[in-house]
Length: 147
Length: 147
Image 1: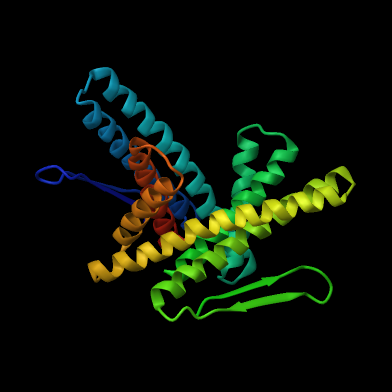
Image 2: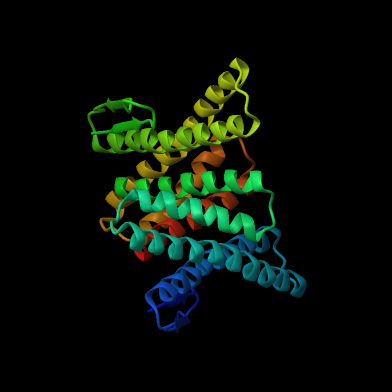
């Protein structure tokens, strides 16, 4: 079941947990990827903005609003990419019937192509994005075996 | 032992395998990361350049040389980042004594900082790069649990 938890570092540790059941493993995984990776991206924006504020020693309403907007934007983008990737890898696994690094390669290529088409890029760029997505996914998969 | 294999799609499938023993698990892992991820990056450059050549229907000596240079550059860069990351994650694991996603987060942050320092960036940018590296590593680690 998709589950996203966000734990802050404040006193009392506020904890947000989200449970959603979309009724199908494909959708569940996709949504789970969206939530988890979106949370990571949003958290990294918080860390970055906090650093900027601490560095400059000032915090204003405009800055907080700006940070919130950035959190939503980056979170949604990373989440969308991750969701598409997780869904694609699941699809590739079902079609191929096996689990290996080639799933990551194909899933990455499909994700690159989908994101590229979705952002209205040219045919040439779509192929290049598919190759790049494929390389990044394969590298991430290999890294995991290494560590 | 670090091992890198590169298999082409040509007739007869040329296969290159590299075995190197650096004498210490830390170095072995780091070098292994460098080889594996460097190979992935170099292969993706080959795919990209091949697509460009097929698209334009022409292939020249200058283009092949250019592709080779790009392979070395991208391969070395991705390899260096991956090597540092794998080494850092191993170090963090040894210090913390456990294996979880926090290792990826800390390893990513250290890698971001190291790469940032190595590219002569300003102090501000180093912190931001550490945060970004941390986010990317954490996202990659989470993605792996999902798929």
